[in-house]
Structure formats: C-alpha cells, structure tokens
Length: 435
Ligand code: SF4
Image: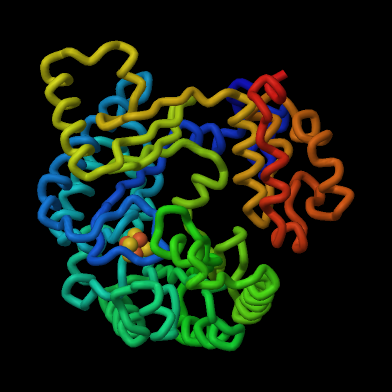
C-alpha cells in the first residue's frame, strides 16, 4: 500500500498496481476543519445537538477559546516536515453559527488560515438560521470568505415550524434566501425535515415546491428522529404525540426522490441532493471516511488513526481550553498528547482497522456511487468482499446491495432500508473482522 510513483492511474482512487493514487493519498494527508458554534436563540423541541439557548453572554469567551484551539490544532497537526497541514474545507456548524458576528467569523478564519494551509478554492460553509439573517449581515459574512450557506429551513408550513419550536416563519426563509443571493452567495443549501407528526403528503409536497421555486443549489432532507432527552421524546412517550408511521415516511421520501430528479437535482447521498457540481465537499469528507478535525464544544475529530471528542458544555469547553493552554505554555504537555489535534479533548479512541473498514463501508454505502472496491483494497490491503461478503450474503439475496463495475452500492430499495445493511457491517468485536 505504498505511494505510487507515476505509473498508470485509473479514476477510482488507485494506481494501476492497486496502491493509492496520488489524489487519494493527498486527500488522506489533508483535513477538513469543523468549527462548532453551540449557541441558539431557542432550543427546538426535537433537537439533541450540542446547542444551548440563553448563553450568548459566553460568546466572546467561547470564540476566544476556539480561536486559540485552532492555533493549537494547526501546530499539532503539522506534517512530518513541519509545514502546515493542508485543509480542503471548513464548516461552521451548530448550534446557530449565524449568531456569531461577521468580525468573529473573520477572526476564526484568520486563525485557520495561519494554522493550516487552506486551499485557495476551499469550500467554506456556514450554517444559518433564517430567523437570524438580513442583507447587511450576509454581505459582511460573504466578505469574510464564507462561500456556502446552509440554512435550516425545515418546513414551509407555519404551523409545523411553530410545533417544532423554530424561531422563523416561512416568509423569513424566502426573505433570507433572497438576501443571501443579493449578498453574492451562489451556493446555498436548504435543510428540511419530513415525516413530522400530522404532516400530510400534500403538505410535504407543498414545502418541496416552495423550496424548488427558490432554486437552491443543494437540498438536505431528513426524516424526523425522536431523540431521547428532547421534549419531543417525552411527548411521544406520554402519548401526546403520535410519530408518523414508516409507510408515510417512505411515501414522502419517494415523492422527494421523484420530484427532485425531475427538477434536475442529483441525489448523491441518502439524505442529500445537489445540482451538478454543488455536492457538499465537506460532508463528502465524512462519507468517504477521510480525516477531519472538529474543534469547539462537543466536536469530534478523526485524525491520525484516532477519534477524539471535545468537552460538551460551553463553560466546560472554555475551562478545559484554558487549562490546556496553560499546560502548553508551561511545557507540561506530555509526548503522548502531541498527536491530539487540539486542546479540549475528553475522549480519545484508537480506531482499529476492523472499525476503520466498517466505517468506510457504512459511510460509503450512504453515497449513491457507493464504495470503490479498488480504493477500499488500496487503503486496507484487503478486498471489500474478503471482509464483508459473508456478513452481507442475505442482504445481497434480498437485493439491497449490488456490485456495478468497481462500485458496491445500495440499490434503490436498499436506500429505504439502509440501516438493515449498516447494522451488518459493524464488527461484533474488532477481532471478528481484523482477522
Ligand atoms: S436551531 Fe438547530 S441546533 Fe439550534 S436548537 Fe434548533 S435544531 Fe438545534
């Protein structure tokens, strides 16, 4: 599995001799950067993300800690020759990153540009709540270098937005979208949720039509998940809310697949559609199981064969960062800590090769193109079939996955039952697959 040296290449991530292609090797050497912004105006009833309402008073201190962590991460993630690590994409996620001022976003990007070698054409996304956007703010954000907006629109039905606890109205989605266009954003994603209680197929179809009228470059459609610990979870448990049934959810999903295909959007992942060339490069990093560094409260990283998780509470994150910086300045950081990309880590797990292979398979099968068999073999030295065929035999017999040329992918039917497939890919214990 060494680096190739200029021999014949094919287009699937491997060199002709089965080793990594230069392009894939370069991707594995680079990172995507995720910056978590945990503030929200109000907590939506279904949300279990690491986000907090009523804590904007901590914003300055948080951004300061995050900026310092970016600097630290850049130092620790340097390449073996001491040069900054290449970074292909940056994603401000939340929470509600649009609650940061443009000056704060600019300051964080400045740190990132100093700490990492950011590609000149890097995709830089910021998640935004339509209730927090107006032209002046969007114009200032665009000037910082943010070149992609991802808006949590969720629905065009006013009653459902209220029911979800969202702070915006359907009209505010349209106003924010128009303002974003005016400010020069040419790559905009809209997020929507379907299979909401009491949502009819025609209400969902109306939401999609109004979304299409705006002409976003990208659409993410998620079915509602009842997460433990949320108000929605208690409502369902107490019988006050009846979740949509699986058939209704499947009808809505199939309607979206058909309607968006007709409108020229390519589905490239189970929940994601894009106009050609507008697939989210940052999220493709996750689905292709490539390295990423997540910084900020509760953020996760996958880097240098480890998975890391950061302290979740805002105050805990700030305190941990301060302690980490003090130790760093005092020269008290042990050699074992140097591999850590950043300073507020509370969990560090070495990823076994069995788990790495399972994750590459599970995440890759979410993509419509599926998993490249030659790329898989070049990365892990074993073929997809050697590792998984026994586990997936019945799934193949049921017609949920198929092999087409170099690719193994879910069938259209399989996309509706993806979890059935993914569950079989996880190792019972690392040794079961590591072999
Ligand atoms: S705006 Fe987003 S992150 Fe904030 S509470 Fe609502 S769903 Fe969660």
